[in-house]
Structure formats: structure tokens, C-alpha cells
Image 1 (cartoon, helix red, strand yellow):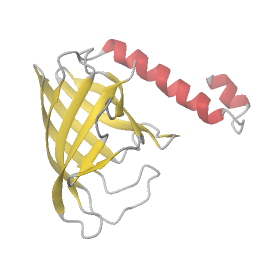
Image 2: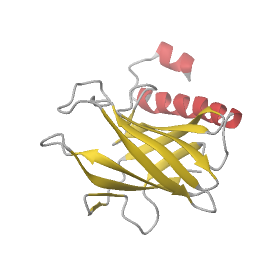
Image 3: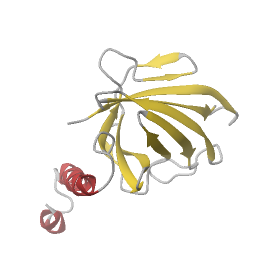
Length: 168
């Protein structure tokens, strides 16, 4: 696929080829590091539940796929890899969830870097808030809670409660 992209970088299916390369490279890394229940590809949402709740308001559209990688034994990071169908290159995710897993309990931090996934400066400065959560017993569902900033005044406000479902 990499050779294909070198020879035809503007091909109609170049976007899908890039996504497939990223997924294959991620799966190689996945096999080498971390708790297999946690490390892998996830999507925002779970069957029969709101995908994400901001300030008590449920949202119901699948918009984001994420990857959890092991950064050190017992430490993990979750980054967006696809938003609204667009592949996000490594290092360009605007949100990072850094955490540890102890049994099924998650503790760590949520960081927003102040930029969109395309690298544009956004209206609020970067911020970090505490993050808590839990991994389901079967390892297929992950729930995380953290605070977020209101986009109209940049004040850290209500809680964001997110559910994630592991992609096979």
C-alpha cells in the first residue's frame, strides 16, 4: 500500500489506503505492548446507550474512532484516529486521555491541546482535567468521565461522560 501511495498519491482511494496502512501499523504495535483488553481500536459509543453526554445532553452520532496504546507498562494513552470519516495522523489528535489501569479502574488526565485535528488554533487555551473511568468485565466497553471547557467562554464546566466500544 505504501508503494501504491508513492506511485499514485492523488488516487481516488488514497484516503482509504492511508487509513489501512495506519490500522495495520497500529495493530503491529498493539500486539507488542499493553493489556490486550485495553490496547486496540475503539469507537465512541456502545450498543443501546448514548454515545457521549455533555452537560446532561446525550449525543447520538458516531463521529470518532480512537486508539489506545501502551506508553509504558501500566500506562496508556487514547487518541482520536478518525473523526467524521477523516483519518487523523499520529500526533495530530486534539484530545489525549492519559491513564493507568488497576483491575478495572481507570485514573488519569484528559488534555485538550487548544488545536483542531487539522492543526488550527482554537478559541480556548489548552487545558487538563482529572479523568476517571472503568473497563467492563468482558473488556468490550470503557466508560470515562472528565470535565470539559465551554466553547463560548472557555470556562472549565460540566462533566463529559463518554462510553466507548472496542472494535474487533
